[in-house]
Structures are given as structure tokens and as C-alpha cells.
Image (tube, rainbow, N blue to C red; front, top):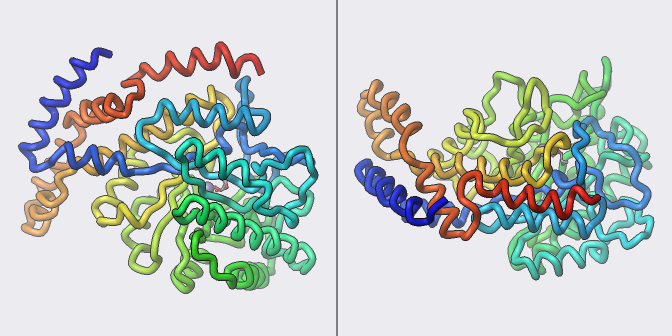
Length: 417
Ligand code: RNT
Ligand code: ZN
């Protein structure tokens, strides 16, 4: 695409937006400061680098067998850098514990230390990237159906130890990067079928969390993530949304909203202004559920747009961490990162370009039809010209031009694996 045409289109768009009171230069600046946290697990279908790695478990699944997934830490780092080079702006990397640099050693989950993440810290520094972190309760012989809520104290203690160590690692990452590392805690705990011990499991989970969070960790922030169900754990989820929302509100923790974790007609976007009255911050896991929590690649669909619009309308841009969480193994995985990230950014851009003061004024004045009309008009405003300009200024391919780069990388790198 010709830079000259992109500039021309942008100048026209800038004027058009100025007419409705929107300063596109200010918005481009805001978008520049909007950092996604790219999830490392899209590169290898959530496999990780444990020497002793077994099958995937914990009620999640990556489907598809597209060739070329990252098989080791070097390949994953190269893939992430390739993806980052095609996404405008600067983005964080979200690591799971099972992606440590274990150097051929069997390191069990209750033995992990910062030593296995030092090379990640160095890599992040070299590549001007901040790190976020996750404890990993799945894909392990002790995962079973219950981890932090297991009635067996030995198993519970194993996962408590794991999670405490993960918080130490996250804190060390935060110190090294001079910016808090955001650590998400999600456990798969649940029951496949009828159970009469719901209260007991939840009491154990609460007690485990209390023990895990007892230590103050100034350079990391804790997030807790609930869900509705997992595969093979369809009847009951210990860490349900009610459980974690209440826990986060009572203990000042960050609540994670994974857009794939709600009932099909439930709106994750509507949670933003509700829970932010009670919890300090939110973490997002932006994903796309298709019929179930299928973790399809994020696109510019209505739920994603509403989610970002609600954040901007709630004036909560700085109270949200923007993680991605999809794992599609059926298409080129770099393509998945690039499409998902750019789509999330476009939703945020459109949210920022909305003339919200004017629409709010009309709503309060009872001008309902104008509210509806202006919201409809926004859909066809030239936001794309602003996004193209943003890509150009960030020196990344504009529009579909990123595909050439992904194809070339596939031809020379991923297809050779
Ligand atoms: C699972 C949760 C969780 C995981 C990652 C790998 O349902 O969404 O966030 O996807 O931690
Ligand atoms: Zn998630």
C-alpha cells in the first residue's frame, strides 16, 4: 500500500473526526500506550517446555494440527518476535510457568525458582518487552480434577507451594523490569458429575488462596480467573465467577474476565462497570468462544467491541490489563497472533474514537434517537484510515500486507520444523 495514499486518507479521516470533536492525534497516542499482553501459549498449543511433559489436561483443549508449531524455547521466542514485528505498538509477553527455561532438567512444579526464568528476563530486556506470568495447575500427574481445592492435603499443599513460588518469580520479574508483573491464577478444579461437596471444595480453595496470598509481593499483582466449566469437568466449577468476584472484592485482588468463560448470551462487557465499583483492576483474557469456550482467535466481533467500548466509557483504561487467551492449532499460529492482536487493537481504537461526551450528553437530555443514531454512525466512520496511519507510523505492514511476511516466515522457518 502506498504511504502517500494512507496519509491522504488519514488527513481526511482526521478532519471528519474533528467535526465530531475527536482529536485523532490524541487517540493515536492513546493507542500507542495501549499494551496487549501476548500469551506465549498460542505459539505451541499450550505445550510448554517441561522435560517430563505429559498430555494436556485441566479441561482445556487446543484443536487442529497445523504444521510448524514451536518445539522449543528458541523457536517460540523467534515466533513471538516475528508476530510482534507485525503488530503496531509495544506489547508485553505473558508466560506460563511451564514455559521455563529448564535446560533439560526435570523440575517439578513445586521446585520451580526464578533461575529457570532468568533467560526470559534477559530476553525480555533485550527485546524491550515486559513480562507477565501465570501459575500452571494443568497437564501434570497431580492435576487430576482438583488442585488447590483437593481434599487430599498433600496435593493441595503441592499446588500451594507451586503457586507461592510462581508469585516469587512474578515479583522478581516485576523488579527486573521496574514494572509490576501481572500474575494470573486460574485452576481447573471441578467435577465431571454430581457432587455433594461443593461447599467443602470452595472452603479449601478459599483457604489455599489465603495462604498463597499471605506474602506481600510489591512488584507483582495477583489476578484470579473463574469460568463456567471445563471439558470433562462439566457439572461443577469450584472457582466459579461468583466465588472469584466475591474473593477479589473482599481481598482487593484483580478479577480476570476471560471472554470465553461465560454463558453464551451473557455479556462480559457488562461486567466491567459493575465489578470495577468493587475490585481495584481487571485483567482481560480476550478470546472468542464459538459454541463453547473454544478459544478461537479474537476478531472484531460485537462482544469484543462492546468490551473495549465499556472500558473507555467507564474511564477505566488504566485499570485494565489486556491479556489475550486463545489457542488455535488449526491455522498458522503467527497469523493467529497477528490477527487476534490487531483485531483487539482495532476494537480499542474504535472505542477511543467514539464521541462519548456528546452521546452521554444527549442520553442525559433524553434524546434517545440521537444516541442510537450516533452510535450507528460510528460504525461507518473512517477509523480504518486512522489504524492504517498508526501502522505506518509504527513501521509495520498496513492492512493485509502482513500476510506476505507470515508466508515468507512459513516458507523459510515454520514449514521446516
Ligand atoms: C482456561 C483459562 C486459562 C488458560 C490459560 C492457558 O480456561 O482461560 O486462562 O486458557 O491459562
Ligand atoms: Zn483465560
